[in-house]
Image (cartoon, rainbow, N blue to C red):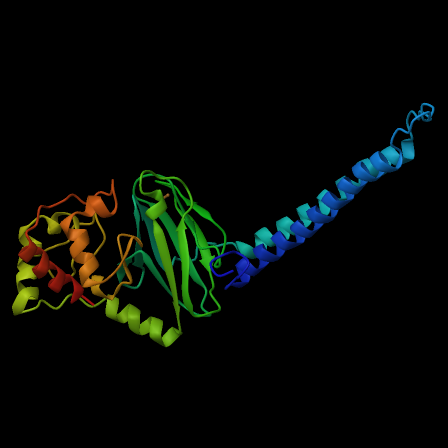
Amino acid sequence: MQGTPFNPISPQELDISNLFIAILIIAGVIFALVVFLVLYPAVRYRHRPGADEPYQEFGRPKLEIAWTVAPAVLLAIVFGFTVTTMRAADPSTGDHPPDLTVIGHQWWWEMRYTTGGVTANELHLPVGRRMLLQLDSADVIHNFWVPQLGRKLDMVPGHTSRLWVEPTQTGTFLGACAEYCGTEHAWMRLRVIVQPPAEFDAWQRQQTQTSVSPTSGDAAQGAMLFQQVTCASCHAIAGTNANAQVGPDLTHFGGRDTIAAGVLDNTPQNLTTWLKDPQAVKPGNHMPNLQLTDSQIRDLVAYLEAQK
Ligand code: CUA
C-alpha cells in the first residue's frame, strides 16, 4: 500500500498509523457485537405461531449502568490514545528556526531552504534528520499532506504553521494538496525525495549555485528569449536579470522530475507541449499561452532543460 498512511516512513506517521489501526480494531469489535446483539435475539426470540406475548420487562438498573459506563470507559481510553499520539506525532516546535519554508500557490509548491536553495514541487529531505517545515500560503488555503510522512496541515494565508518531519527511509514519496483550492487543486501534487545525508547536502549545495549562462547554440538563444519574451516577468533564474516570484523559480528546472506540479514528466518533449499551450495541459493554471513559435520553443526548451 505504497503512498498510504499504512506504510509509514517516519516515527510520527507510525504513531498515527498505529492509532488508526487500534481504533479500527476497537470499532470492528463493537460493530460485530452490535450486529450480534441485534440479529441473535431477533432470530432466537422471533414470533412463533400460537405463542403468547413474551414477558415484558421494564428497567434493569444494573444493565443500564453497565451499558452507559462501558462506552464511557472505552471513549476515555480512545481519548487517551489520541492525545498521546497527537503529542508524539506533532511535537512542540518551540522557537526553533525552520529548516525550510513550503509555500502553497495556486497550484504548485514552493520550497525555500533557510540555508539557501529554492525549488518547486519537490521536497528534498535528508534521511534520519529531523527537519522543521514552516508552512505558508501565497493565496488561498492549501493543505500539506504526505500520507507516509506525517499529519496533514493547513496552509493558511497570513498564518504560519510548523511541522516536524523525520523520514527514516530513502526514496520518493507522493503527497498532494488536501484542501480544495480552486480549479487545479487535483493537480497540486508534491514529491518528497528522501536522500542519504551526503547526497542531500550535495543537492542543496548545487541548488544554491547560480545559473551558468550558455554561450552558444539553441540554449544561448533560449537564454536571451527568456529575458525578452514574458518568461522573466513571472519566473526567476538566479544569476540572470530574471527575479520575479510569481511562478516557480526555474534556476535548477532541468533537475526536477515533473512539470507543473506533477502533470507531466520533465522531458524536452513534454516541456515543448507545455510551452505550446499551458492551458491545454493544465486548464485554469496561471501561465498564459505566450503564442511562442516552434523555433522559440525549441530554444527555450534547450535553455531550461540545461538548468540542472
Ligand atoms: Cu492547493 Cu488544493
